[in-house]
Amino acid sequence: MEDMGMTAQLFQTSSRLHSASSWLRKIAQGEDVDSQAQELLKWTGTFLREVDWSSSAQKGTAGGGLVLQATSIRPTFYSVLIRIAPELQAAGLKSEKQIGGFLTLLYDTLSAGGVIKGPRKLNAKHSEAAATLLHEISQSILVQMNNNGLPRAYSSLRDEWKASGNEYSNSAYSPA
Image (tube, rainbow, N blue to C red; front, side, top):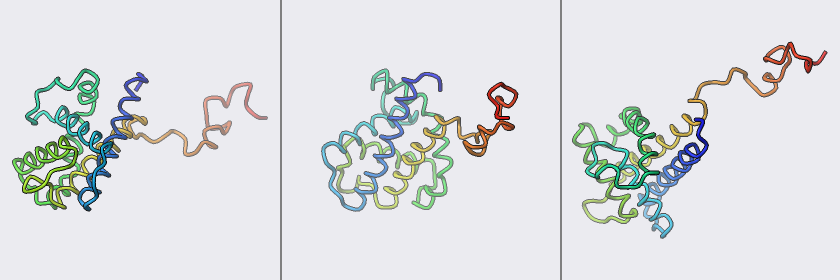
């Protein structure tokens, strides 16, 4: 990622998704949501609706910066859904229709600031699956920002600067 502004926005997105993941777990345990957390959850709901092509939200209504972030994250979102399929199945979400309903319920919960009661509330298994989804998206964003997760050519900083193991080995700066 060469554009530092976009990198900063993606890092912020990752941080927000990670925090929202933590809040979903807290809500499932009965913790009350403060006003700052409600704003975070509302942002997350708007963002995920923009990311998910199958959501009922009109695309592009969230503002240019958010739309750009959503476009950048969209492939990650769908790959994470595929990657966490076992967790979704363990939560009872086996069909595409069930997963679609779960995502809609998740977006509604987030957009309401995490304060939904009654039959439209995420159950414990679904809350855990939702938290896992957000956490995995957050982590995947960080991996993409960090050289796409590829291993470094050197195993440690010490090896990187060892005269025989880098491009400076033939320079005048090599130790004798």
